[in-house]
Length: 315
Image (cartoon, rainbow, N blue to C red; front, side):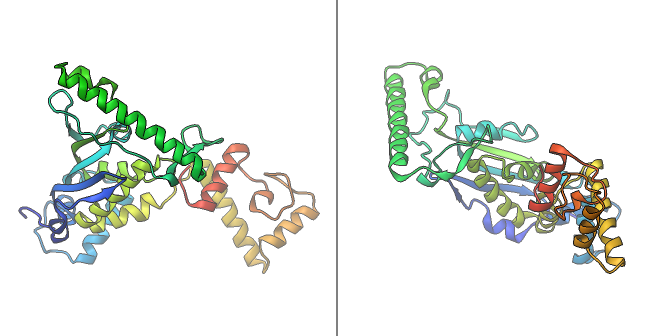
């Protein structure tokens, strides 16, 4: 099987997916798609020996069982325009190949990220690295925006003046702020792209980089739809359990099945446990599975486990 052509990917080559106020993501090039994953996994078979349904099943099996090397056969190259503070978070993913615009060779553009009023918020009280959900009131948001724009304008005017005076570009740039837009070409294989997306689409990631990840997820669906569907099903929207959490989950399932077999339910079991004084876990007769029959988790471990069950999010 020679070069894999994916019509949906061909249709979006060089298309700009707008992100933030001035940023974008473009798919510059790709190598392979779902067919390449299947071919790599079935090296002894020729093309067309399996149906689409069987190929999708194989891809799903490979991803579920973390057989990652066939996914590494698929390569995507993105052109991204992004604020420097987003780039600094992004570059921590060291499995990609990157070429970024250089302020030593080029004059940096007068383009800065200015958050929308809805994205301006106070520091979260319970999240050291994030903002509150509630936006600032309109008056305070206006003042913050004015301060940001004023600082950006002064910084660029100083930079331009130093360049005009003949100062080396590599020195003139040093006072430019993190809100300045940069651009790079970013190339990565599909396995490591999925890892990037699982982290940067998480609710704990900063909103600005999440928006870039959302655009890249849409692009990736076009290049490898079956693989991306399996990734979303098992990784992005899935939750992992520790050994202790799995034991507690099995305990609760067994408890539910025992109660169902007796024609009752968890509520009846909770009432019986409370009447007998047999509370555990949180130590209350609240009818919750944690309070019935000796919960195997406690404290923060129990809180994380129950939060996973409630939200479906990895914690």
